[in-house]
Length: 213
Length: 164
Image 1 (cartoon, rainbow over the protein chains, first blue to last red):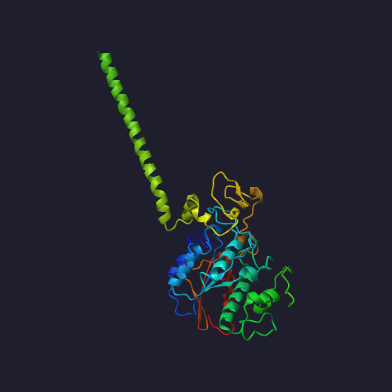
Image 2 (spheres, rainbow over the protein chains, first blue to last red):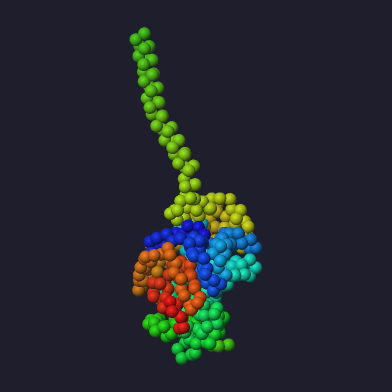
């Protein structure tokens, strides 16, 4: 996030998140949203120090403030993962759950402009291989559409606009799109394959829609 | 006398030989020492050295980790060459993987079928803004979310009422 990244499988070493923020144009107005959805190659040791805001998390938030962002979104990391850290890391695996908790604990006090989009909770029943690869981090086709749809629902929710798609075919798009993280607790996932006309998964191990409570 | 002179000459020749031999050795050691002193600084400031900073951080005193909020303290990881394992956290020196023959590269999506393609993002260093009506969104992500691009799921980033 803050230090030089490892080489990605696309064959280049990407900028760190901090560098990317520094390269962005200034936010035009209070509506511009910066979404930070990275961190799987980092680990918990230097990520956040409660109440100080002086480490990696604090560095990113400071950079976002420098660019006048009034809306910063943090996408939680999937804690149910087996993703192995890059080879030169001191640990084999990071504790993404601890990193998520650190963001939650600091978001309200130190960084009021920080909102959490809880992908970890939203996809906690997405252990199915149809959504994520075995490392639990990289998205497969359905997972990619699930996440893109989820982002659009969140943005619509910010504006109080209708959802971009209904939760399932035949249902109405809500007049004011609810926060999908909250809705998923009662409804499970949207029917991504049906909504977007994707090929049905070959395996029938998709998590079923939960019954409304 | 002649014998003495010869011994003296031999001794002088031996000294010269030793000097010839030692001088490059000493110079070589000096250069090596200088290089070792300089290289960490170069690594820190190096732009393309992908993990050098992390590697140096590991060897630093772990004051930052002491101050970490992740209590209890057994969650902290102190790098120590002699430690094999710290409170359930595997260090790099301990390879938890099964024998080589059984290893699978679990982080590589390509090990699954069908194998996805990873087209390079031509302009990868410039982020794209996504426009939802009057709201602009920019997403900083890593390969975890790259499937959105790989699988064409960017279509789902376009809301029913919005245009990309």
